[in-house]
Length: 587
Image 1: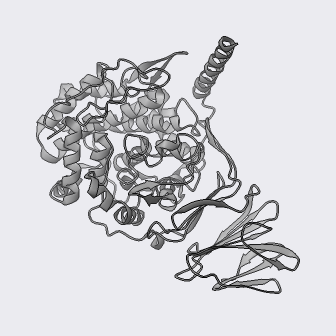
Image 2: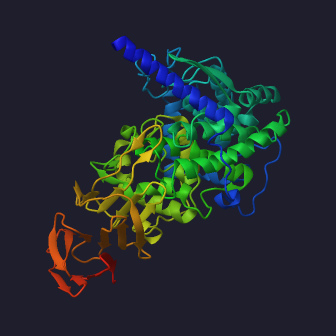
Image 3: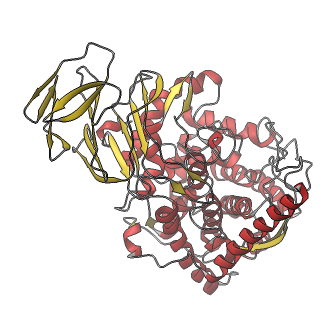
């Protein structure tokens, strides 16, 4: 019986792989992008890159004086010290000390990878790490170390995590980050290499192709398949592939030895892929089809840095465009995150791979600040910076790993480049409303302030989200208030109407079954938050013209009495009414 089940399971998996490959071949999810120009804004004063001009992904040559000035600042010194330690365990002036002995992915079996967790272990991010040091110092020693690391990858040396490798990685989703970030390393080391090395390693990027062998057969991936993605945008695999391919294409764009006609054609596909990830994988509130942990992967591993490359190399700013999709991928965490015992967390973590959310150690839960700063417009970057300084800076300093604790050199290098040193942090409430929605996935989030562990955070996923994994719809509002997590009320299904005041302190949800919920935040008054719902729930009830209304206080102080007159309700400084059975705010 068990053998029969195993055979059936393998057959189903093979069918899924075949269908995914077929879909990619015939472009079933590569649908036209409506009004593609609206998804990016032109960069003011943009100067096109010249053939052979590098770097162009994380920054341009004109930015070097500013970057070198950061080397003498406390933030820069801390990040560069961390980078050097990750490269070789000490000063970054030699090759890595350790190498993963694995010769295939999932060495430990049963989809258990072998990870070597030591500073100075070889990673696919080493080329970029050495490349940044070359750019900052001009010392070709670092460029040569980058070359040696690139050549090791071509020979099959695996990453600290055996799933990541240039040769036979553990799936196309692992191939994308390796290709993309090694291309960033190529971009940074370029001027420190001779012409022959530039051409040889550049052509390795241009003609990237590898067999990926699994228990269920083999598949071959190349620059074309990664650019369009071998899985749909609702899979976290997609962004890791298309983001990595975009980085590769942007690096070899206009190189004299490259097939520019092919690159131009693939860049058109890549631009569609950038939009598809933001609009089909994610919604306008930055929520992802498969949930939070997978959404972290789909945002940070390659995608945001690919958009940084599109901005610097081609002058197209996706995060600065009017649709909020890309911005909210990074900004949604400002609504959801609290800090407990010095560690960031969200509750509940919905969907697949919950361990990724705020893990901050490897790839899948890192870069929430350093990679996001590379694409966010200044005022949003200032809010993100304020959040870090308010909640995490002291704790990170205490443990000696400030700004970016990831074990990957390329993430630390990008953080050095991207971390703002000319911005003053801005309290998020000055640039963001206190609540937002994601219309595609029916996700809603509220936050009363950004101050401490007594902040009130409310979230609701009103409909199930689906990718290859998914997140089930909530049956109640999920609340964190005054350091405690709990659920309240009822979510009866899809939302018919969403409304909020300009600053988001007053909000209304009306559901398709006729029930409604009003959420309000005070400005320094008690109660700090108020939830009012039609129907009977936990809290105080009052009858308004024969209709039961429930009031739930979120407060650390005394609560006011409910006063009802006609169809109106007064609760301290809050004013509401019931009209046609639906709650409405009056202030």
